[in-house]
Image 1 (tube, rainbow, N blue to C red):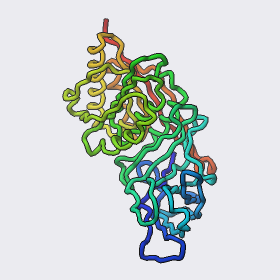
Image 2 (image 1 turned 90 degrees about the vertical axis):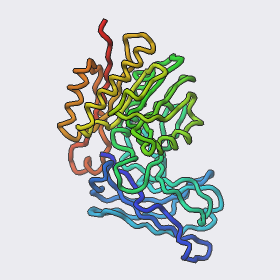
Image 3 (image 1 turned 180 degrees about the horizontal axis):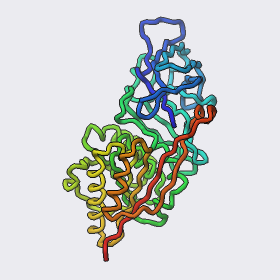
Image 4 (image 1 turned 120 degrees about the vertical axis):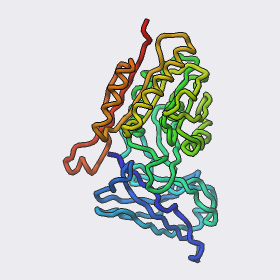
Length: 356
């Protein structure tokens, strides 16, 4: 499984500590799973760096050891490093490089960044930034902001990491080349990572991205991430409320090429509503373009409960046929070193054609 370096308390400069030509920085971090239900069980070196427009500077190293639930980091930073715009990096990458999906691999421990700041007196943001290198894409750097803390909500989950790696190797399967117009709708978007990955990969000048979730609060970070990513996106994007319990209240105005959902079937109580929502979106899209073929449905899931099987039964009952099923192995250095089985994320593609 992937682990995530998270800020329990955002990094901050202590204004009460007066040092000659230095500033005192403290942070409280943890290294945990996507759901926050387990901590990294092995030894890790956590490197702290400051990244300016010119260079990356290593500031110090802290040790994470087995049994830890949190780690307090305290560092003294020369003021000369804080005279221009910069951001702080907390990572387990010894080279201080950006987390990358090179060769289709997923990161082992996802690094944590702050927003840009200038000087020790400027308050640091209350979000954690994830930076990912997308190899061989027009947009090579993807930044995703998450809420701080251990809450499950508005965080990147393993299924999104795995789906990103899969998409980079299956681009033409979900984003056909030569399409003048192409619309992608993401269900349960959360931070908006998958929708923004697809938008970054699209070659269409008229790609339309719809990021949907249950309410405005759930869409808050998706809006932020989309607005900050617009420079690399040729098409248009929008966020819209889509409540799976009331899909009839959501109206499409353009046919869809793809509907995508990542880690949205872990709660069996919501699965019937999710399938009804997918069916309604497909029906609306078919009616708009007066074609029998509907959009592809792309589902990424890390199987957590046997109850999730009901999703596939209901999809089949609703007339959807699974046209592809692949798995992505989750990089886990600790499991590999101790001979344990590495977890996988399942990628499913469905299609539906109307009768006649």
